[in-house]
Length: 184
Image 1: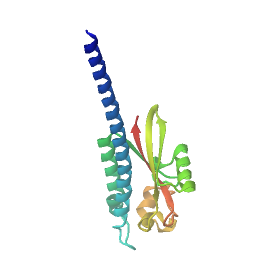
Image 2: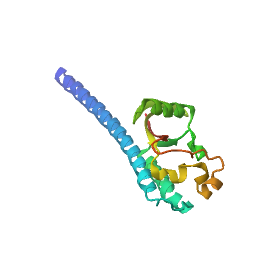
Image 3: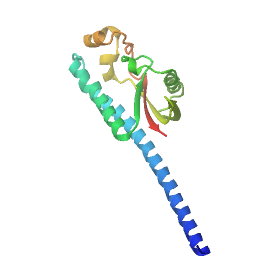
Image 4: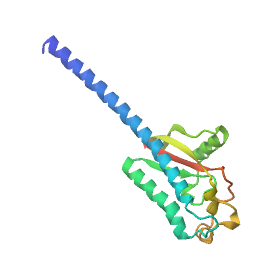
């Protein structure tokens, strides 16, 4: 191969490598934007659906499915379509699978102390590295139908979740976090 052909081949390789690098950067930025948008969608969906509960009305299992069940279904859809893991975590959890790990408890404390509305970090779970986007979830007035006074919780929640700790909240309090985990 002559010097000119070699130089052209080398330059083409550099350009292609540069485009691949740029494409990787765009893809990573797109995935990060999606993570933030997905967290926002889930938080907004929970808020919008909770507001459909009429003040003073009885919250039934059907109501619970229409609010929390619909959110859980959407979380599953996003997880599967985006190839991400989504975690809800709280120090005062209702469902044991949403109990904050020590790492998540530290994040919750960070959101309480620093009053931030989002955080990016990296974490390794089960030997897999993830870039993690986390947002706080705050209690709204509509949430108090199930997360207000202990004695005011719907009967089916008391029966279905005997170890429930997700009550006693007041409007504006930090309820927990949602994390979107992007495999690196």
